[in-house]
Each structure stands twice: as C-alpha cells, then as structure tokens.
Length: 166
Image (cartoon, rainbow, N blue to C red):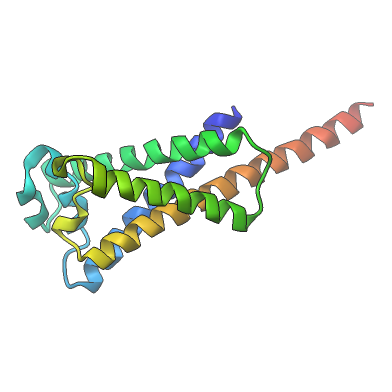
C-alpha cells in the first residue's frame, strides 16, 4: 500500500504541476492554454498538433492523457525510490525530485526521438519548456511530501489505536 500511495501522490503532483505550468506559460506567451496540451498529441498526429488552440478530443484528450501517463511514469520511479527509504526532509525531497526532473528532461529532450518528446516545444518557448520540467520536479517533491505526511499520520493513528487496546 505504501508504494501505491507514493506512486499516486508523486504522479498526481507531477501531472498537476506540469499541466499548470504549460497552461500558464502559454497564456503568458499569448497562446491558448490548450496549445501545449494539444501539442503533446504530436506523437500521434504529427507536429501540426502544436498549431491547435481549441479543445477537441483528437488533440486535447490525447495530449492530456499522454502528459498524465508520462507524469505517472516519472512519479512511479520517484515514488518507488521514496517508498523504499526513510522519510526525507523537504530540502532532500526537493533535491531528489530535481535529479529525477533533470533525468526526465535529458530523456525527453535529449535521448528519445523527436516524435516522442512531450511536444511542448511546438507551442512554447524553450524557457517555458524548462519551466514546465522544473514544475514537474516540484510536483514530484510535493507528491512525495504528501505521501510521507499521510504515512506519518497513519503511523500515529496505529500507535494510538494500539495503546487504546492495551
């Protein structure tokens, strides 16, 4: 159950943070907030996906699902790492999540074929893409912190229950 909790929290944190970052960045750059979400569907529909600014099933649903899937992939790696170790302080969580974020950036924008990148570069500046990758790392850290807090609260409840029974 602990591993599942860490994966769920880390994956959700990464998905929410990266999605918010690309959508906010798009607005700041004068684009629709859906443009980078739609662009993520480029693995299926080609680079023209980055030109779509409106919601549609073909681009928006595929792009959003792809981003969530990728976030949960990185969240599962980070969650598995955290769940097998003692709880960490926030600074250590942030450091470790930053390493995973850097690894994700290297893989997503350096090692995989262009067709398999997140696609954000089709709708956003390089600075905004970097910001989104950093946001993903912050989301991983936040998710890890939340999972640790839930686990600590559960431990406290178990201890109280055990004391009440004796």
